[in-house]
Length: 89
Image (cartoon, rainbow, N blue to C red; front, side):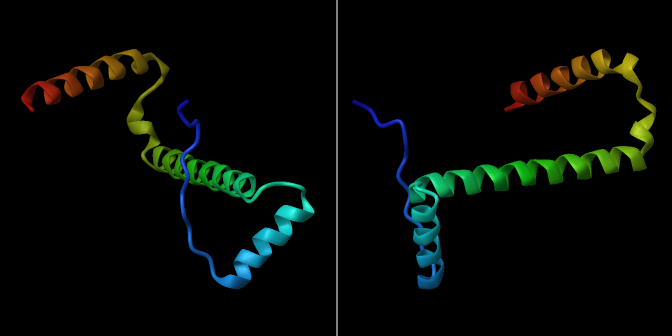
């Protein structure tokens, strides 16, 4: 039967490793559960940071004058350009 998880090895300073173990025991969770939650939290924060930066850049550029009526056209143009790039490879 195939695994549904991938094992990873990480290195932590001894004090941090102890803190992880103590916290896992205190919360009746596994160390793996703690790290999965930590990664999901980190990833969500990273996505939020990138989205905020993108929105800020869009506000500074005034969305290049694009409005809702331009969305379909811009999508078609982007897809067409991407297809051209793939054909050149």
